[in-house]
Image (cartoon, rainbow, N blue to C red; front, side, top):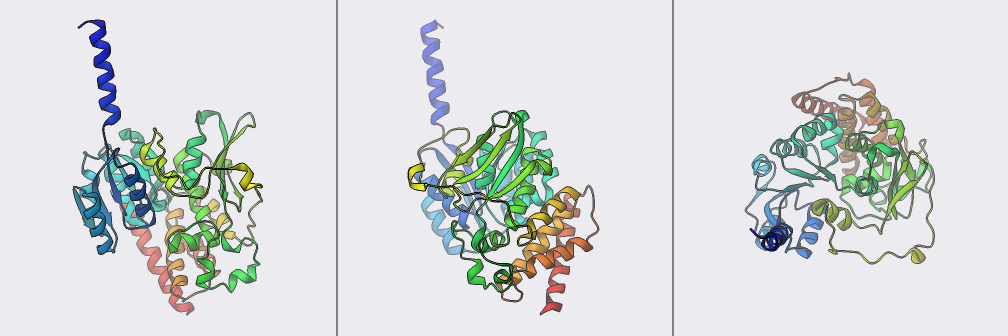
Length: 382
């Protein structure tokens, strides 16, 4: 082969690789993140092929999505998730479901060498050590979808030179309210987030700042940082999505308007970037000011609890996550007050006997037991 022909061959091979569609499945396609992911993919339809869509309980929406995007197969509920995550035709799987049901499918995908775009908090909060160990073993990339972790991921060039992770929090609807206001808050008030449009559970977590506690634990596992090197700062405008501090004192932050389309697109197209969906061009002049303050741990004790449970390790975070989730559901059902969520979660954590190096089966057993105990305790309260 002549040099000229060889050069042409290389160009053709590169073009074929670049133009190849990325094959993706979405676990949780009918939820908030899943729906927005499909909006991103629709804009970039020449770059993606959808292998499978899995929804929760919204059968009609899933059928509409299937008709529009023509996946290889669909499933409703938990049945079928293992099959989707075992299909090596996938280049990447977006785990966008909520709750513990995301854990086993994620591990299945990892063991099959499939990269993960992760939007499911429970996967790392419940079993971060196991998940990250398996990802390393199988050479799988886990790209975070949460805006905070996505921001950190974008800022890091050499992780060995990073001294600290700085996670931002909007402060939710009660940032400038009193503890008494929080104790008497209605469900409607708790769900009135000033910046983000999210599902009910995560919106309540944002109101109590438990979402930030969960993100601290996620960041610990994703980036391998000690809890003492992960800070939280309240930033009401939600423009700075998170930052990192290098060993020389330099701080690199990722900024943008509050839109989940951007981190979703980053995660599923990584390491490439495309125009895709943008809420609008960012303007420093229009923003005018950016405010920052320390979290009020007296008003938002959930953050402190998350640090404590994260440092304890083992099943401590499993307990905290399960108790908090059941308490949030009880609040949404009008059975308890907003501030009871922390009190209930703290009680379950105080009483829990931690397993230091649990297996996946033990993690699920602890999760089930804590949920049962939490429900029983709530029944006694009402």
